[in-house]
Amino acid sequence: MLRGVSPEVPHGDAHSLTGVTGAKNPNFSTIHEKNDGMTGTEKDGLYLYALVEYCGEISTGITGVDGQQVFSLPYRDLSAIVHACPLTPYASDDQTVVTGWVLTHEQVLERLIGAGMNTIPFTFDTIIKPEKERDARTVLTGWLSKEYEHFFQKFEKIRGRKEYGIQVFTNRQKIRDMISSTNDMIKQLEEEAKTSGPGKKYMIQQKLEKEVKVAMDAEIAGIISETKRKIQGYCDELFLGKLKKGQVPARDMILNCSCLVSDENYPKLGAVLEEIEREGDLSVRFTGPWAVYSFV
Image (cartoon, rainbow, N blue to C red):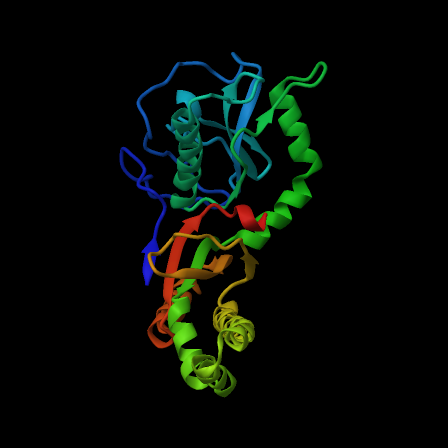
């Protein structure tokens, strides 16, 4: 089984800390050295990375997207992780620059998660803007006040849990060969095609391909159903994603899902996936932990 983890973050790992409500002020090692020295009051907007379940300010020591200094704004027993920014979204014609911004955004989230913080992530380019006479900080605080119960429920849902990715691959040709050797109707059609004339042979082959497709679809559906049955007991929630091509040579992805998994069930889920791979002639990719985008 292929196990994947979050990309390596430069300049070391986050310092160890509890990250729970009422904990001491956590400090994180820096991601980058660049810092333009601008504070939250020197720009008009606030770029929002995440909300964390933590009461008090957090000295992150992290440089975020576009080299900006990341800091926290506390509200009751949660804190918003932000940096000061212009009101215009981040945009560039250089895809390398955009990719770097997105990666840095994810690295900030990884540092929070790696430090044990219960984290609700926000997508790249989420910007809090001033409204009328209220600056961005006031707008953010008002929003947190209004949506506090909603966020509290989300924190309850994800506490002690992380998001993982599971992808399952199979060799369709092997399934096709197995069906040809075990399905009596398909074996019969294949034999008839060998001895028939061109016109009849064409008709038989059309019927044969239809029968093969039906049989293969049923076989793969059974594999997917059985795999989901085995893993669902270890997942609080499971979200099915789109299938992707070209991920593993000579293999087709048949299952792509995101799972919300408790820290307790994580090793159990890994053991089940290893068993699935051993017994089913399947390839399994198990990645994470990731920010819980799929479940908040």
